[in-house]
Length: 492
Ligand SMILES: *Cc1c(COP(=O)(O)O)cnc(C)c1O
Image 1 (tube, rainbow, N blue to C red):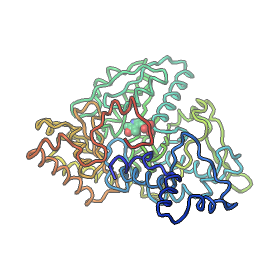
Image 2: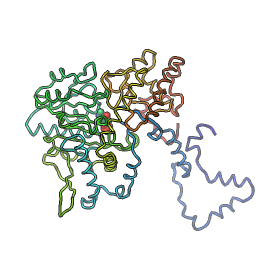
Image 3: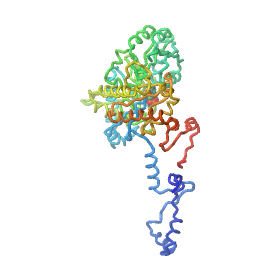
Image 4: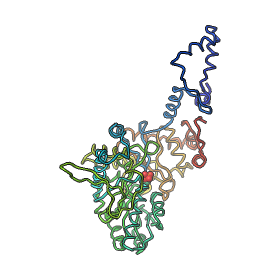
């Protein structure tokens, strides 16, 4: 069978007519005999095929999707070292809970008195997350990280409006995730860039010069996108405090800090976390995200509605939705993505008061990767690495190889490629984040693959330049693929 036939559904259309002709060739039955056999009353109500509908059998469809699934790469296949995105392994226990009919069959519009169990899960997760970062408040309404940022920006806007302060600028370091300036702008603020120093940390002197009475807030990622801890947090807090500005921390990288830091001591007013990065859950192509937004005492009244509280009534705990005093209002149809909150709840319960160990292991793994990869790749900052190791393209560029060639060569060696060309302030960036669940053996295999790429560059550089050679889909035009996607059930 030709390659095209094998993978083209429309090339395998099942036709009854053809089958009847085939059988008739044997001269055993006449066509009408067969037709007579098909006239049993049970077979009468067979559905008529629709026009323009792919005529496929169930087994063809099952095989088609199984083949597609085998061309995919997932956590079940191997290392997923996508820095910044924290592609964390999602334990089977989480899925068991999320698939439990007691939860999965709940309708989001059930009245509160029939949703008490689910509301308890949301409330407990909300409280646990606030406690983990040491802040008084948290909401799980945002649909994802960027949505949490936007909700936080709205809260800051209402906070200053309430105080009759006309502050229109949000400061953002140049290493920030693209969603930070986007959220600030969508919330009606002007964005001003704060440069990084040569170590990759926020330049404190520049920050001090830029902060004035028009500054609403600094939006800073910590650990930052170079995977290093912004250690001058207290200086930053003092600079902002002096001018009455707020501190917003992009906490999407909390995987490095979970259970290890106090946002209260750091002077954090608001921080969005990503349940789908830090608290497991499949994400990316695998499932929806879920944001959390944590806040300080003074931001509590502005939290989005609905918020959940718990009260004791007639000797039992009752969970209720309510609208915080000066709430920014609703930011979403229903309260969060319940199944993701449930997975986070299971994850937190499973770790209990040992949850800081997940951060310790994630940081240890990232440092192991850094140390073992440094003979090949050049590190972006000399400072200690937190949850990910960020490299620039210097050692590749010397040999006329691009970061993209390197990433595709990793795919040829059976690995998902790390995040590349981000953050923008690192030339040809490569971000490796193994997360806490990887074993030394798996990381060693990845390191061997990198070693093999560098050996191949010496002997047969063309092989690396033409990578990937072994993948199902070879080089694609990534710009066209996102701007003019051709959607079809045919495998072209
Ligand atoms: C992933 C990420 C975000 C955005 O989160 P989404 O859930 O994708 O909206 C923001 N900031 C940082 C640092 C991130 O890594």
